[in-house]
Image (cartoon, rainbow, N blue to C red; front, side, top):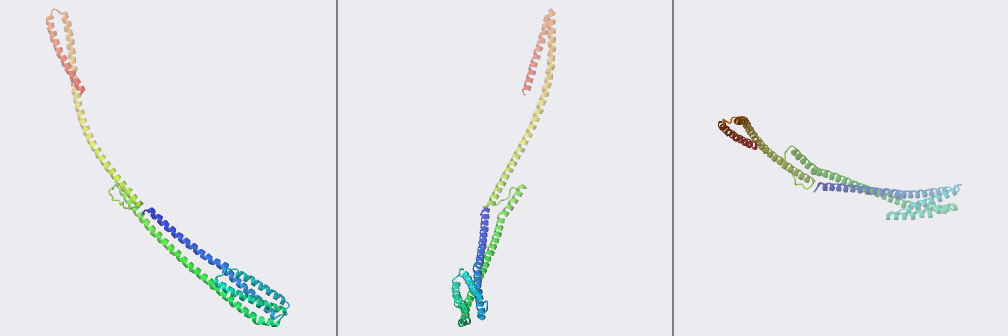
Length: 366
């Protein structure tokens, strides 16, 4: 597996864990929000509506009780009017409660409370208000001492059952919320632990995959810098570090070939230098020989110069002799004889000159 693939896999795993943790957190927030919304929009409103309903009924009952105790009071009529207002307020509060959503269990209890309340309001309190206004003592006694109390007890019993059910429902919602909280907390902690372990393991594996080969490569680079080109480089890895090692091995082999080529060239240069030195020695020897030949040539030239001078002297003497021969005709025979001898000598000198010139030409040719 290449390092690139490992990095992608690690980032993908961490991304999945982050998504999982984020999703768990969002779900937990949604659950909490749903519970709080239900408490705010349903449970609290429901409890408040039931409480307002019961409070208004209690006020209405207290009002009729006060009038029943003092039927001739000046404010008796106003008190009965306020009692009817309390019943109207109770009806509105109870209507708000009935408008809320119910589950099946609460719906059955709400129906029971509604029936008990309607009976209390219609057959109990409103009937008592009518009897009090009509000043009907027997009906007032029946209602106030028996019927209202009985209907009120039925209503309060059913209302208490409904309140208990709502309390149990709220407790159940709280328990479910706590369970969801602990469940989401456990999932989040597990995901965090798994993420940390995955990050730790991935870090260790990546360090092994990257740092170990880099350390080895650095050691090889230092060895190459020190001139050691015979190290064995591991090229068996199939990832990017393996490619680096293969490139390093190729570089080491190339440097070794270059060094061998330089050494071979140095040997060739040394051999050529020896040959050049030998040639220089031979050239020096030949130069010395040429110098000796030049000395011999100079000596021959001096001899030639002497011979030429002698020939010139002989020619001058011959010219004098010829002049003397023309003047001394008498001595012709003797002089002719001498001239012949002199000419023979000149001829020999000319031959010598020709030989000397040939020698000079041969020396100049060499």
